[in-house]
Image: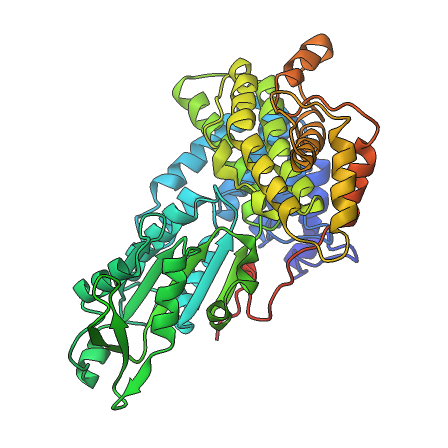
Length: 502
């Protein structure tokens, strides 16, 4: 206290990054914490391990922890990190949990439906990342995103497009007029042209400078990896300059090959495209004109989405139904999260990146522990197993210049010794698919399964791919792991969380 009054810095850090507030919270010295906070101690400073004084509170007994928390909130006038709620659940600190929920609920009420805060809350993506993403689209005319299925890309981008259609407080650019195509349903180039004409993007008369400056177009092409999507990009990105004010293309409709129409469109416009396929970078020359942002499941914020979603649902249900904290449910939900993460990690090692799955596939996980096991089994047998089987067989069918003969011979040998649950092996490629499923099941689902003994064994037997006989499985696993080959990243890509703005 004496040193603080003499002007000592309450936020001075030791060699390991700890401050006096770090040390006081570790030991639960309430009066020291009170004085440090009054003299400007910062509870958000991180030490060399990335821990703040807030994080140290969860190590205390609950009575002292709760008193320190209230001090932090009252004197620092700031809310604690959301992770403290999860720590309270894991340590069964019921009173701390109730207190954190009460102050967090008050803060959530203040969230307005402005540009990014509401999206950040709905999608668990930091608001600043969303702002950077929007600015990136504004600064670059051609931007593309690719990522696994079940990543909520469609819902997220539709919400973002709605914001881009109106002026935003943090953006200095004029609003866009968004033209959207969903290429899961649009399969004809004629349909694309008709829509662009209807939206007044393609015109039979030239654009004036005034018309171009008054309207800024953003073409949003979702799931563009089909022939119509690629064709419309080639058409628009290879237009001819017309009088310096706009571009033009000559188009012949499929239904009327004898007549050609000349369309004019702005010289400057934006295109935003999305894909699910991983092999986007090498398919067509036109995609090399885009700045790419890959949504990588192993990187934040995507790698933590499932856990945050499930725990928020659990907390909401506990509040609504006045449930107590169920440690067994927490362990089972953590297992579901681990299954998803290990599944994707294993697919990377097996070079089956096109079968990666985003967290949204598991968002409907039941909040009753006894129902989770059957739910996960159904997901595996109806969605995961058919997907892995399809992509692993497709990968085997791809021509391999030198090793194709030996690979086929090896697959034939494996086929003679394998039997997989509910998968009939009739070709060497199917045997490889069964082996991939067997590896995934035992590395992703079986590990840390909350069930034990006979119940666990019987449970796993009902998964597609649970049975694998023969001695060739280990060699198959090691072969797949050693032969992994990721698609090379081009120079024109940027991680979502490290977008470089101009």
